[in-house]
Length: 474
Image (cartoon, rainbow, N blue to C red; front, side):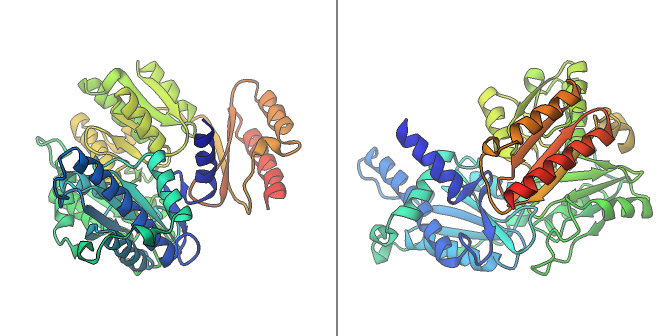
C-alpha cells in the first residue's frame, strides 16, 4: 500500500494530468529532450512487454506488430517538433513509428486497433491555445493507457538513465508516413451512420477550429449528402481554437442563422468534443446531446442497461429528465477517461460530458465529436423533427461556472475559511442546488460551479467563492 501512495503523489505533481501530459511548448515538460525521454520510456515498456511474451513463446523473434506505434497530431506549430522528438525516442528503443499527420484524437484510437499497433500517440492539447501541447497515449485496444502505465512511464523518465536501456545499433527502429489515414477514418466515421439514411438536402455549418479535423470532418458530412459551409478551416499553426471551435460557438450560431442552415456543428482542436447549434442559432451542449441520443437509443432498445454515464458538471435537469424517462444516470469525476472507465467497468454504451465529450462505446473508445454529431443527425432523420425540437428535451437548472486562473494548487479544505464559506452557501441553497469546485487536470485553472433555482443568488455565491480563491491561490 505504501508504494502505491508514493506513486499516486508523484503522478499528481509530475508529468501526467487527467488527459495525458500537457504543458506550454518549449517549457517543461514539453521540451524536445523531455519528449525524447518520454518516447524512449514508452518504447522500453513496449519492448519489455514483448520480451515477456517472447519468454512464453520459447524465444520467438520480436514481431513487427508488437514494435509498431502510430502517431497523430493536431495543427499546432509545435506539433512538428514534438512529433520528431517522440519518433526519435521511440526509434532509439527499437520501435517502428508510423506518422499519420493531422487526425482527430479518436481516429488514432481507431487506427491503433485496426493497424494492430502496440500503441497510439496523439500530439495535442485539445481545446487549449496553440502555445500549449500535449501527449495522449492509447494502448493496443484503442483505449487510453492506465494510471499504472502512466506511473511507470514517469518513473522511467524521471528516475532512470534511459541510455543504459538502449538496444544495439542494428535494432534501431524506422519511421514512415501513412498517406491514407484520413481516408480510413472518414470511412470509419461514416459507417456509424445508419445505412438506410442519408444527409441529402441538409445544410450544415461546420466549425473545425483550425484543428485536426479540418480536412476529414467536411468530407464525412459531404459524402453522406449534406451541403457543408465550413468555418475554422485555415490552420496556420497558431490559430487553433482561437475564438473558434467548441469553446467559442457564438460565430457558428450567427452563421447558422445567416445561411439558414439546419444545424451547426462545432468541434475542438482535436475533434474529441462537439457542441451543436439548432436551426434557430441556439447552442446545444453535451448534456442535451446526451439526452437526445439516450432517449432515442432507449426507444430503439440499444441503450445498454438503460443507463447513461455523465459527470459532476452535468446539469441536474439532465438527471431529472433521465429519471422521468426510466433511464438511470451515473455520475463520475470530471474527465472523459473517468466516464469511459465507468462505462467499461459496468457494460454501459453511452456517456459523456457537458463540455461535449460524448462516448459511444459501440463505435469508439474515446470521445468523438464527428460521430456524436452524426448520432444526433441520425435522430433528426429517424424522428423527422427539427434540431430545435429535439434540443428542448429538458429544462436546465440555472448554473454559474467561473474558470479562474491560479498560480498554485493545494488542498482547498486546508485553506482557512474555505470549508465554512462552502457550508454557509450550501445552507443558503436549502437543498435546491449544489456547489462543485475543482482544479482543472489540463491547465492552471480552478473551476467554480454553483447550481440553484435563483440565477442572481448563485451568481453571487460563485463570485464570492472565486474572489476568495483568487486571493488565496494567486
